[in-house]
Image (cartoon, rainbow over all chains, first blue to last red; front, side):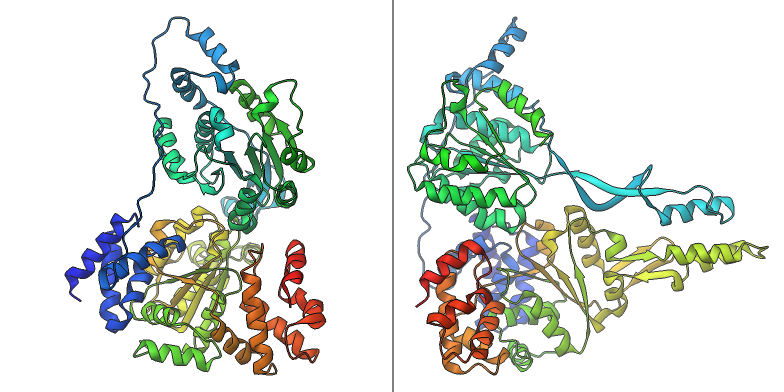
Length: 344
Length: 284
C-alpha cells in the first residue's frame, strides 16, 4: 500500500463525515509504517476513528478500499423552509405582544420567522447545585493559600484571614422534544426554543424523538436559528412520523441519561403525551427518570386549552413522576416557565 | 520501545492474565512506539482500567492514577503547596531574620511542594504509566488543561520553573462516554473502543482470573452473560461481573449457571432492580 493510497483512504473517510484532518492522516501513516501490513485495519481504526458510531462507516470504507465494496445507502432528508424575510411594521410592539400570546399551532410561516427573533431573547434560569470547586467568599472555610500569600505583606503574620466556599453551579438542562406527526404544529417552535435555550450554557443538551431518539445538541449549536432548524430537521430521520414516547425515553436513559447526563439535571420533556405504545413502559421510564433527575418538567401544548385533562393513557401513566406540568403552547407560557424554572 | 511487535505485546499481556484482542494489543504497541496517549472507551466493566494496571506491571513501571471527578482542578491533579507547613515555617522565622530573600526562596522549596499525580508522572517520565481514569467526569476546562500537558509533557510552576519529562510516560486515558470528549484531545490520542469479548475469549478470561472455576461452568456463565447483554438491560453485566458470578457459583458448588443456583447468585451479574426481574426470567 502506497503513502498515496493511505491519504486517499483518509480523504474518503472525511467524505463520509468523519473529522479526519491532516494531523490524523499523518498519525495514520505513522501507525501504518510501524505495523505489519496485516494490521492496516487497526492502524486506521486507532488513528482515524474517535467515536464508536464512526466504526460502521470506517468498516464500510475500509472494505471498499482494501477489499469488497458495498454501496453507501442514501438517506432521505427532510427539508424545512423558514427563509421568510421579516416585514417592516410600524405597530411592532403590539404585534410582538400578540405573537407572544398566540398559540404556536396557529402561526403563519412569517410569524414563525418573527418568533425566532423573539425566542433568541428567552433566557432560562436553572436551579443551582454546590460544586466541588471552591471560590473566594466572605465566609466559609479558611483559605490557607490566599491567607498565606496575604500574610507576606504583613511580615508573615496572618492579619487578614481569607475564606473560600464551594461554588454554586447551574444544574444541567436537558430538553427532550417530541417531533412526531401529532406535534407537527409545535415542533418547529419548540426546536427554536431549544436553540435559544441551549445558548445559555454549553453543557446543556437537546434530543428529538418520534419513533427513535436523536441527539441534536450539535445541530443546534449554530448562531442562526434558521440554520439550526434546517440542520435539526435533516438530522432527525423520523421528523413528523409516529410516536413512541416510552421507547424513546428508554433509549435516552439507557444511552445517555443513566450514564450521567440526567443525573442531578433538570429534564424538560416537550410532548403531547399521545402515545399508542404500552403505558406501562412509559410509566417505568418516567419513574427511572424521576429517580435520576433533580426535576422532571413536562411541557404539553394541549394543556394550553383550559378544558384539557391528562386522560391519554401515556400521559396519565407518566404524570405521578412529573414535578412541573405546564403548557408551553405559546411564547408567553415558555417565558413564564423560564423564570419559574430557577425555583425548582 | 520495550516490544518488538504486536505479538510480543499480546504475549506479555497474556502472561499477566490479561487476554487482549488484536485491536487492543495493537493499540498498546502503537501507543508505546509512537509515544501517544491511548484513549480507551467502552461499556463499564470491559477492563479499561485493568489495561493500565497490567501495562505498569509488564513495564515494571509505577502506576500513577488520576481519578477524575466533576470540579477536579490543578491543585488536586498537578501540585499544591503545603500551606499549613508554610504558615508554621513563616511563624517560626518571625523573630529577627537575617536574609528575607533567601527565606522566601526556602518557603517555596521542594519540601513544601505536594506532588499530585500529573506532576509525579512527569517527574517519573518513562518510569511511570499514567492512568487518567474516567476523564468524561471532569469538566471541559480541565480537559483543555490536560491537552496542553499531554502535548508537551512539561509543566511550569510559577514559583519553581519548568519541569519536563525526558522520556514521556505511557499514558492511558479512559472514558465511559457520559459526555463526548473534545476532538482536540481525541486527535492527540490513539482511540480504541473496547467491546465485550466474544464467547471463547470470555471463557478464557473467566478461567484465567478465577482458576477455581472449571471449563464447563465458565462456558455456561459466559453464555448466560452473553444472553443477558442481548436483553438491552440498563446496566449490562461486564467482564468483571462475569468473573464474580462464576466465582459465586463455584463457591456454591454449581456446575452450570442454571436454575436456582443461578437465580440466587444473579445479583453478582446484574445490579439494577429493574434489570433483575427481566434477567431472572431469561435464565434457563
